[in-house]
Length: 72
Image (cartoon, rainbow, N blue to C red):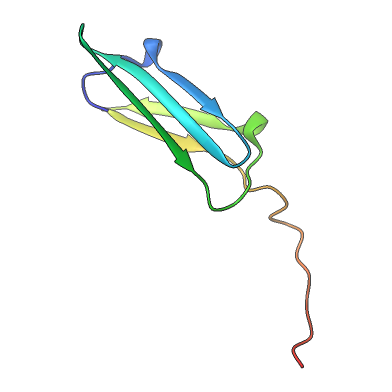
């Protein structure tokens, strides 16, 4: 997201998706939404913006819980 300022960025996390918007210059805006393949815990999400790259870290929900299924 080169040309954007982290102070004006908006990131909305949901359990199955996220949306990010940021003004880019005076007449343009970056805006996009993404679906996630697994549910995450949005309240524990963190985001970092460095050198034009937005990195989002969100733990996968119930990653620790797994169930063994006997194959017949």
